[in-house]
Amino acid sequence: MKLKAILILVAILAIAGTTYYFVSRPKPAAPPAPHYYVWNFDMQDLKHITMSLPKSGQTPLSFVKHDDGEFYFDVPNGPMVDNQRWGGGIPLLLSGPGANRLILENATDAQVADYGFDTPNFTATLVLDDNKTYEVQVGDLNPEGTNYYTRLANTGDIFTVDKSWYDVMAGIITTPPYIPATFSIDRPTVSAAEVAAGTPVDISINVTNTGTLSGSYDLIMKVNGNIQDTKTVTLDGNKSQPVIFTDTETVAGKYIVSINTRNVTFTVK
Image (cartoon, rainbow, N blue to C red; front, side, top):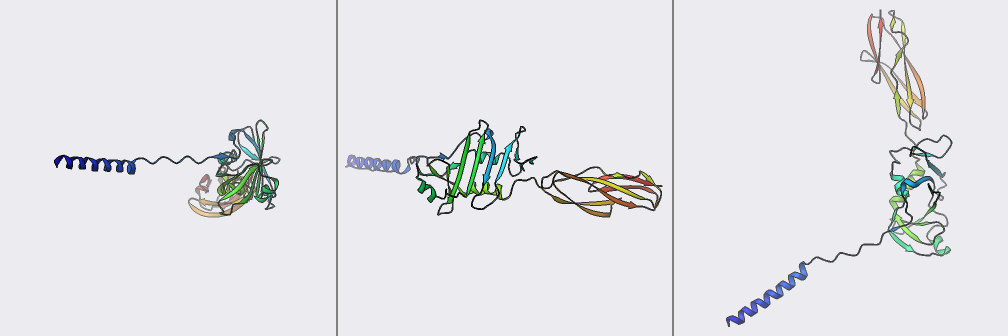
């Protein structure tokens, strides 16, 4: 009887152990989803970019890499792009976005048109240092509104790329990456270091807009800490302009003039 009980217990433990093994064993990892690149190259090799939005009628934009390694608008004396928006991100995104799916291989002309490539939403011509060229097309948005159909021109393979990629590229065209107005001022100068009481003194300061877009800049003149005058100057990109304030003091003494924290002094005798 005792032996029978032991055998039953061993059987129960064996069943329990087998059940635990099958329940607790690690699940086999799912095979990785295939990853596709519609095109792929080293972003450092990219030297010229032309992008357009054919359906919107927006003016195409071209950019060219100069010897300093920076991209500039490809127009005569074109300005450098705003690296706050451009940085390395735009060349990286253009060098080969990962596609979500391969939709169709060896598509016919009719099938290509069905996906919106007869009049693409976006096109890009990408030229590398060795003059190899990629003609990129982005067709219609998929029915779910999450991906755009994408391909290289003159090929029959159609992929999907995330909508966010298209949004970034389209934004470069609709809002070109010009450097915003950025102002700097020189140290002010006075027309005379010493004047008689009641004699006007001109205080001059040079203002420069180092951006590529026009903008306005406020100047506040203080004399011995008290606001005496304000002026606003509007400048186109990469332009400078002198601004002149005038101050008249009737009490002898030394006066400190500050314009937006830049100081100069004069003395009234």
